[in-house]
Image 1 (cartoon, rainbow, N blue to C red):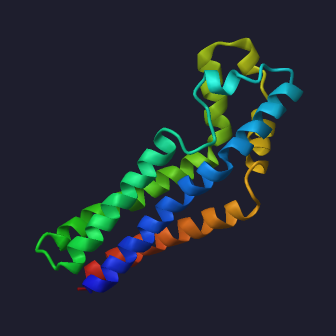
Image 2: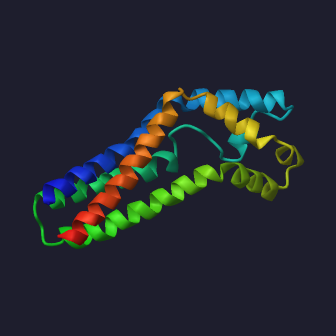
Length: 172
């Protein structure tokens, strides 16, 4: 059981590390295509940077997933060491990862409305008139097409792994 849980933990860690790697490699290209879209719309190309919107691996875009990965690697170690705290830690951390990934997926699906709302809160008329779906589509085109397959595999790994781990705990 501990080896199974450690394997699940390491798979989840790898899944969380994958996206910052992609964002680090291709984020600048995504930002450039987004800025080109802003220029096409007649909006200053610095608007995204001025408002803290980026597509690279800086800030929380790396810190959060790398922190989750580090925690999951530590949990795998706890499982392999067969420490008494392994079972309760698995229950808590796998549940938290499941919930956190649900929030990530939800925020990805509501990105257009979230960005529009953020731009409205700024009160800048130039930001308010941005065609947000076109902006986000342009940014997405800066990433390789396989990125979205990787994101799907990441979600399958995280959701499947957490559910499998929790089921294994419940059945043991």
